[in-house]
Length: 498
Image 1 (spheres, rainbow, N blue to C red):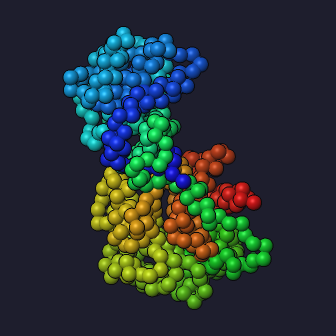
Image 2: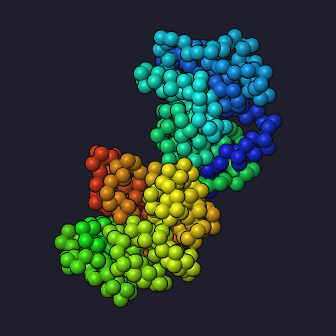
Image 3: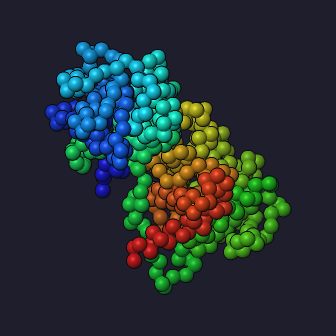
């Protein structure tokens, strides 16, 4: 069920909600919500608060908050350099109220003050260009002060400088420790640069409740996104009940990739796992995981499989391209990763086959691979991750996980999600191969492509988070450690259903 905590809206959709409820006093409600969190952040000993107010409605929210803090005997200084006569109506009223109650507006930050809290009310979701001049200086000063004083920096709605739709930074950007966002979540808070600038995020519905008048544009991934497929196993089952999956890859010097994927698939419950290894010198057994069945790559197509992955350590040889073509010709749910994506990017004939394929295709590119698939640059991908994931899903008629900070998941119907589990420990070699193993294992056990992708990404990140809690990482976290952590977490999920 939709709630303020899992729905995501682009700025244009939220402006429509604001217009619909123009008479509901949303600015006053936003100010009250901000004041409540400010009091929490100031506890137990209130200290002076510095408020940076911008020339629009975000500044109005900040002024409403400042007025309420003053009624609670909190010293507040507001920095505002704008034209009062040019303010929107509600913001102008907030300024008038603040001044009428004895507040003052300063043009610069007062020196040598031990601020207990800094509030960013400069631009919120209304900015889609680089900050310059006075405002850029204010952002940089606020960041330095918060770091020097070790005080919280609370952003209202969205840290100034951050694109609320994409998570792209338009130059100097507030480094908030806390972000209070209104009405619904904004995708840019959760992907790309957003998580590094937002800190702890709270969503406040301003009393409108849910659902809002405007349907959400996207959602955050949670366990509820795929809960209907989390089913305890029947006692009366056997290995064939849990799927047989294949992984094609492992060219010379890249055997580790399919081994990681295969081990991960086993530990997420695949009944049987076959690895088709390209390296002529590949071993016949994995002594660390002897349950894996190692074959020549062509032998994979003779096995009775329920799902197939192609790409980990595949290389870009003619042989690799031929194997990808054979994989696409199967009627199995197919995961393409790593070099399978790189080959696909430059083979138009295979792209056509991919689009026309009746069985599901799932793509798991990182930004550089996505750029090749769309004939763009990686920076283009990172500046608009959501729409790039949607374009990949549309162009290849596939289910897509655009990996990175705040992995974006998109389906061919135009739906999208952002996954918020995970940490920098996943930025290590082999992490994507483990994700491929998780995903293929779920597909092999009969999960639909969308829910399999949501669950695999969420679990992959949750395993990394669990390892960090246990003191393993994020620095030095190795991909091979994820599978055991994911197995433990997945079984806890299942145990909660009994």
